[in-house]
Amino acid sequence: MRLIKVGLASVNTTVGAFSRNVDRALTLARRMAAEDVTLGLFQEQLIGGYPAEDLVQWQGFIDHQWPELERFARETAALSTVFVLGVAVAHQGLRLNCAAVVAAGHVLGLVPKEKLPTYNIFYEGRTYSRGYPGMAEVHRGVPLGDYLFRFDFGVLAPEVCEDIWSADGPQRRRTYSGAELVVNLSASPFRLGFVDTRRELLATRAADHQCTIAYANALGSNDGIIFDGGGFLNQNGRSILETPRFQEGFTSAVVDLERTMRLRAENTTWRSDREEWVADGGKLVPILDCMGILQTRREKLAYPSPPHRSFFLPGPDQRRPAREALCEDILDALALGVGDYFEKTRAFKVIGVSLSGGRDSLLTLLIAHRYAKRVRPDNPGSLLQAFYMPSRYSSDTTRDAAETITRELGVPFQVIPIEEAFDRELAVVKQMLGDKAVTHLTEQNIQARLRAQRMWNWSNSSSGLFLQTGNMSEKAVGYTTIGGDLMGALAVIANVPKTVVMYLLDYLQEKTGYEGIRKVLSKPAGPELAHNQVGEEELMPFPILDACFYLFAGEKLVPAELVQALTSMFPEVEPSQIKVYVEKFVRLFLQSIYKWVQSPLSLHIGNLDLDRERALQMPVVTASDWTRD
Ligand SMILES: Nc1ncnc2c1ncn2[C@@H]1O[C@H](COP(=O)(O)OP(=O)(O)OC[C@H]2O[C@@H]([n+]3cccc(C(=O)O)c3)[C@H](O)[C@@H]2O)[C@@H](O)[C@H]1O
Ligand SMILES: Nc1ncnc2c1ncn2[C@@H]1O[C@H](COP(=O)(O)OP(=O)(O)OP(=O)(O)O)[C@@H](O)[C@H]1O
Ligand SMILES: NC(=O)CC[C@H](N)C(=O)O
View 1 (cartoon, rainbow, N blue to C red):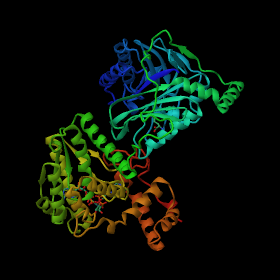
View 2: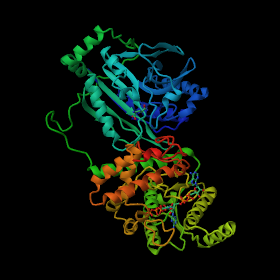
View 3: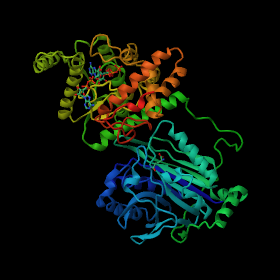
View 4: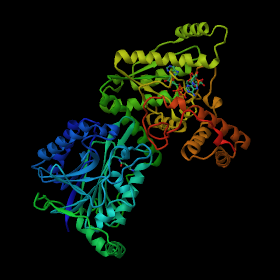
């Protein structure tokens, strides 16, 4: 038996806040040591924050991280814990995204990331250089390269995030070379359902390589990317620990490293694969001997027996029902996104929502309120401000709904009519047009633009964070006004499809019983920019719109394939009508790219987003010849 206690930490870092990030990590490091943690892990880019994007190109951005790494080493010198943490270094002019091993006041080694994600939201290959097999350099007197580390408790293989996502990553050669414990420092952004992907991937890798894997993930939101934290400890395919997400802190568990070695010895497949690898000339990864550096304190560790006292029977099932898990996950992620943007930019004192009594602005307000409740539990409403701005088309129903929900939430609510300004703007535009008529759409858009202008003016003088309320489905088809409801400083639900907006509101209504939500849901969704406007009548039913979006923008099917897929998905709709919907969707989608490329920074909850930087890089000026049958 060789027991070690592994601590998995997640720190809510801010890009560029090197000393604050390290201060937060030090607090956790001391607590880990006080709890006899043998090995404490932090996330990828702990010191610099993630994603630093092109800031990495500034030499100063890299150079200022080293003194902070040394400070971390100095301030943990007296602790009997080995730490692994993420840092960027510039070596011979090249930027490397490294895992640093620190113990007893020393930086013992740096292991650069080998697999640099450059897809979807990631751009690492643009700025970083990769580590490689056999790399053996020295940086500021510290070994830098493809190394393992032997301590009195076992052999470690540090690696960084994407390294584990490749079947051809460094784990294979490192475990064949004697690594027992793979230490993965991650910055894995929140994406719907992705926690299951991480869990399954880790179990697979730990079983493939017959090793123990400790994985610590980043926490917090930077720009629109949200990190949900959460760590895993998995031994040879068996889950030992999964830490809570959306929380700063650490969780630890004891594991018997000898078990990893025994299972390895018993596993003839792993052994013969290794023998073949060695026979084929596989080069063993050198092990740095750190035995004399630190004596870890493991005498008091207790064997990891199951708390429910059975090695055979399952423990209590603590999983949440699927619907609750999905909704709470999205809401937690978006509330973290709003809160971290509000706090980390340091530009704002209050959060403002232009509240229509409709679904999108309601959900946006509820998300902001969820954040406010966390930081001001006694008076969350004091952090928020809602404005209802009626025109001649606004109904009593929406006003009542907006009033009711703000009362229930304790959010200050003001009614600011735009009617007078609407008349004035109409007169001005008529004058500008001379003998041409003002179009109906322009009349609609004037209202939306007046509301946005007022929100900006409010924001200027109140240091208010003006939240943009548009959803992804309507953004996809340009059903949003430039300079109007497309405006805001941060788009909260811009990557949430309309059907999901509805699903979340149904869930929240059931959970909270708020009358205001019920009132909003009692009226069909529509912009109230003209008489009796119903969004689904002007566009198409939202389930069909979202299916078009998923299949066209996500799965990259062509229109004829969309028609085929939707005909079987919606058998109650005439195929000729499906064809009309598909053609309309594709036309509107391709015509509306110019709108979403100028929309505000948005929060990301999936891989399929309307964001030119983070997901779909679409040209604005295109012809659609290729979409024809
Ligand atoms: N390719 C291109 N590149 C750059 N700019 C382009 C462009 N094509 C038009 N434009 C410009 O964009 C303008 C048109 O855009 P914009 O002014 O937004 O107006 P537009 O797209 O014509 O109308 C906005 C639509 O959004 C709907 N809406 C608005 C607000 C809320 C809601 C809701 O869901 O509740 C719905 C509203 O009912 C209407 O159907 C043109 O006048 C032109 O100046
Ligand atoms: N009367 C209003 N007062 C304040 N803001 C408004 C008003 N009407 C529209 N807005 C703003 O414009 C945005 C766009 O309106 P839109 O109709 O798309 O969304 P919604 O009303 O929130 O949801 P729904 O799709 O259910 O109508 C709103 O979310 C809100 O921020
Ligand atoms: N920072 C990273 O390397 C993250 C990449 C990884 N595939 C993830 O999404 O979790």
